[in-house]
Length: 279
Ligand code: GLU
Image 1 (tube, rainbow, N blue to C red):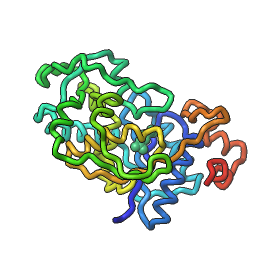
Image 2 (cartoon, helix red, strand yellow; image 1 turned 180 degrees about the horizontal axis):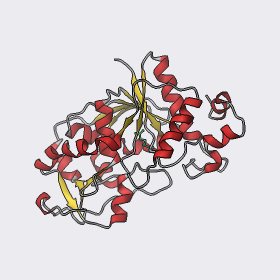
Image 3 (cartoon, helix red, strand yellow; image 1 turned 120 degrees about the vertical axis):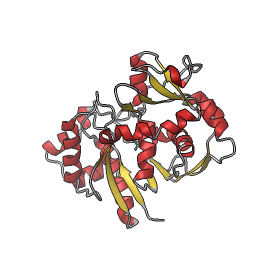
């Protein structure tokens, strides 16, 4: 199997050491396997993503000495396409409109972050039919209906990362308890959610190996469920350790002290960065 992986940052801030580790690891694994390393901007959250961060990410990665294969994919250019590919799920009765508060829905659109509790939706709008969708409503996956539709399909994935290596089977009860009815898109604002866009693009870009931080391991089941519903292949997963600060806290984009740009400005070399992240 050809090895194709990607680095998929959300350009909501500058890259820090944790991103550098993720990008370097994915790049090195691809090159060692004579595979391909792709760069994808997960910029569908139009409120939080900024063009200047896109440019800074590209500059930082180039400075680190990384090269990627082919053009950078910008998810923001494909939002209509993602939404149109969602229609079959609506027809199958697997989606429902949701008018819960904008803040709830907004929080549900981006990739989950460690340290920010993931809100499992209580199902307030689950009784609504798809025809009652109003401008501004979100579309949520009815997880119970989805699991019932997939009752005959194996929902499995292989993980090679250090913490959870092995074969995994999606546990429906755990998916209900920990992930629930996720938002897939929002009408009127042409927004599509991370879980969905990422599942489509991993398939469209022929990603064989998803290499990303361990914080996303617990959300892999929902992506496997979406892949099965949409007839997309399931790649192999490798969730890597997180780079933490001296207090053990995962680095976040807002931690400017760990921003690559800062280390660059202070005269660090790409080799120094590799050393700092343990590569
Ligand atoms: N865009 C996501 C993030 O920055 C990464 C998603 C992924 O690698 O699947 O957290």
